[in-house]
Length: 306
Image (cartoon, rainbow, N blue to C red; front, side, top):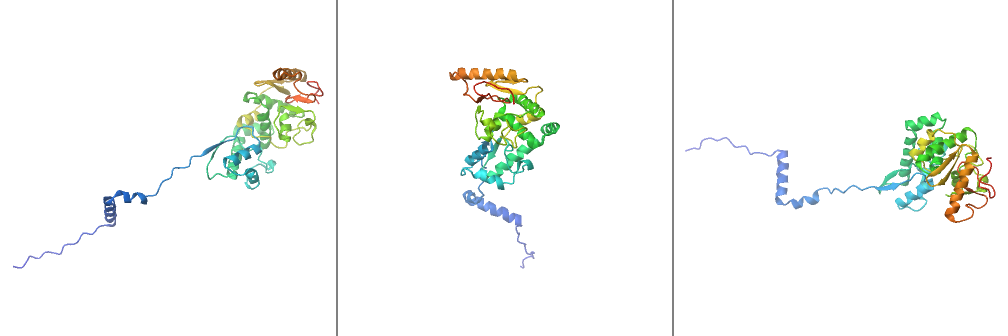
């Protein structure tokens, strides 16, 4: 008996998606260990190190810190300044002093001296451009570069942040009266040192940063000022002070008259002599950290203003 006619059966075909599913199922079935080496290895992100630049550091100190952190030969960062393309104002003439903003910066294996310096300068420009600082500077007729210069003096001279506004006022008052600033900090910068003693001969050196002999602000900043110093530079405390001296840590005396200032200098000398056990606090011809005041002459603790 002939078989009844049956139409031919069509063979099922896997779609592309189905074939992929089957392939992965087969691979998983024969052992997941085969897949592990084929997957991309995800490395943990590098944890940045922290580079701290404190307020008041001079540019060479910043350069040396970067060289140490990046484990580079000494002088590498200083040499990179000329080619780093830093966004400095024209007045700076390529010198980043005062624009290496003090802060904590992340450092990785990809960090370079030029990159770190550029970040510091960019940060300084941003701080100087804040409304309070920028508007305050314009109100006093100062450019951002002059603001940074004044702030750097305040950073170096103020014994603590609470005194910054008063130190700023002394500088503004002296500038308004066309008096030389007579700041030891600018002399220290000229002589590449840090000291609390200034000899009479120091005040007579022929140098652009000798503010005992030259009126006005020094030609460049003398360190890296922080935001508090910048704020004080454009918003000084009200007062008529023209002199100040830090008698002891935490005790800075501000005076409007020179006779009062001499008494404060004498107090400084007395305390220092007692602490050192010497008959005289300073040798002849040496000032007793009499900031914003002329140095003593001969063995006298103070002298008439110039």
